[in-house]
Image (tube, rainbow, N blue to C red; front, side, top):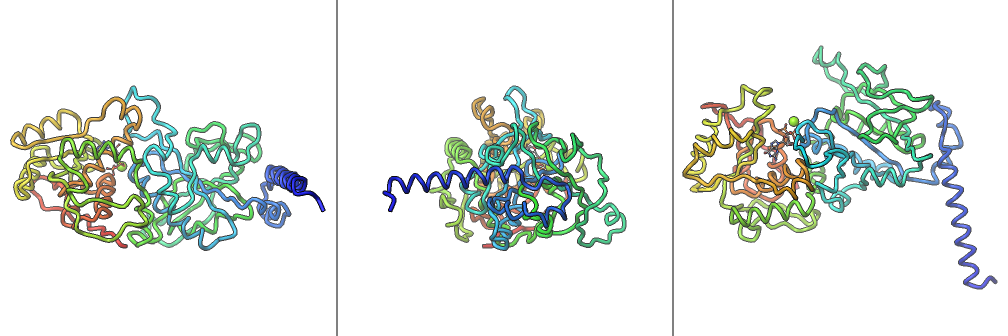
Length: 445
Ligand SMILES: Nc1nc2c(ncn2[C@@H]2O[C@H](COP(=O)(O)OP(=O)(O)O)[C@@H](O)[C@H]2O)c(=O)[nH]1
Ligand SMILES: [Mg+2]
């Protein structure tokens, strides 16, 4: 019999060799563009040595931060189901780096591109719902050749223009000739370049356009895990929620806790300027979202919060956006009704508009969050927006801007914290008109 020292070395060497062979096999993975050949090819069997399958996605470039957060929920529920249904593989979601967003216009704070999710969200919290990794981790762990990472396939989702013309909508998932001016271009046979979140060292073996209409779960048929190990979906916002507003939707949404430093900054602001703490305001939550329970008895800090969306809304939704004077009147009325004297304003308004609002509300304390250079440099425009959202979400009463996804995310956070719905689903109205028909998206536990 071998002595134990020796046998462990033999075992170690054997494991090393198996590992080495696997790496070689993986790097040669299915190097043929012909899918049918691949499916029957023995390389598929070998590929099973590594069960990791990576899903990546991106969203239409002009879409803002808060719609993108909603797309994450769709993808997360999709992957959560996939994990239950396709146990043979180890599914991982690669988080698309943040950047290049139209609204992130602060200058002199360094680049606002390729920002990791960890800057805004709590990654261990996300991982309690589905396995996620940051892009840099993917680039590190996915086999690459001479510093180049090659995805196996990119599906570019496209709306079916015909359906939008006729108004007859039905589920569709078919490979089609690419109709859009594609941002992807052929570099060489089996290699396409593209934006890829700004990473020059990322390419794809294939790019296919997919005429798509329907629930995100029907993308399952496109995954082909026996053929592809890494697959990206572009224009993922085209795929619809599997079950919008369901318990599963809310579980995924609840897993999106923010970076704990953002909570600390917001909490310090609440305590200092708004006299608001979780203990006093009955807004305490367990650290672990999976331990949260249904409740409706949150009280919130003694302030009214408003999300006053301006800038592009003034142009794109001019028929709905009230004047500053009208906003002031509506807020004054509510402050008086609630017997509150303090107003917290989250807004993208220009300074002149904010000053105008202040002038109409001289008898009240009107506050907004102004980040220090350190906070803005570190957490960028995205982090500051989240701080505004957190502060709004802990107020006794919230008034939002209709049709703003920034407002919707605040409403969701308030539902999770446990406020009575009537303190949450309120909107600023166009001058003198009644409004507030955006619906109440109540939490389901
Ligand atoms: N800090 C801060 N930024 C805001 C506020 N309102 C809008 N923004 C900025 O403008 C963007 C609005 O775009 P988006 O997230 O798409 O929300 P929507 O357009 O209102 O549905 C946000 O992501 C922020 O960058 C606000 O109250 N506070
Ligand atoms: Mg937007």
